Length: 403
Image (cartoon, rainbow, N blue to C red):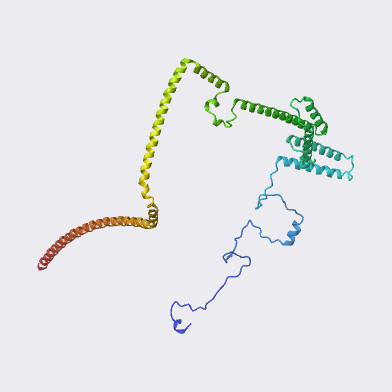
């Protein structure tokens, strides 16, 4: 330090010393870069264990692989088995167990009590599972052909064979006896194998049903022919659609219509009714003549009117083509004129709007002038009042100054 500052008070004359703390080996560095020192806890044992000692101590231990509470990741969800799938799996496992037991016959003696008990237990389980499978309607998985395409193809071949047998026998007659149908059933049953006897019996019953259905169709065709002959005899063959017939015919039967016609004929055959019918006919003829005369008059009047119109239109026929051409040439001009008229109408509307706005603006300006004048008068009055008050105040001040 220079000598000129040495004599001044409150000056530190000691040399500068820079001290740093000692490095801590066990200090941990946090994320922000500053060392984090844990506090000592009595409950924590800080004894050092070497890796070799730990390996020697726990090398014979095995970890628990089952799911426990401390596992973080959940186990993959297992697939839910249906009761039928569980039954099939149990049957398959029992079958595998039976095969393993059969393979181990050579190793163990056959007369061993454990082996005999295991075999009997396996057979009992298989019987129970097969009984449960039958109750559920499921087939035995050991039978590989049950419910497969091969089994269905065999059933289809048997059905085709029975249909071909029915086709070769031929169609039955209308007055056929039961001996033919019985022959068909017996032949079908004879051709059927013993294993499928119940199914083939149901199929032969189906063939008998087909025969009865074909016999019914023959009767229906015969009935159609008889109905067609009746229609030809009655005379309704001309109207194929019922809409062409009158409501009275479609709503009544043939006997009622014949009775009604008979009544009309009896009425017409009586002399007293003939006179009234003749009078009505004469009246009707007179009315028809009047209608005919009126129709002729209207026709004549219409002809005269058409003739007058024709005489007036004839001179204009020669002018019409030129007039049409002229109108076509002036069509664009007429369109422009229509647009121009619309524009003029729009301008007139705008002008009327502007006139109304000017009128309203004039009213506003007049009111503004009036308000300006009133405000000016008010300001003048206020200024004169203020001037009077100022002069009065000045006079008072002068009087006070004189005193």
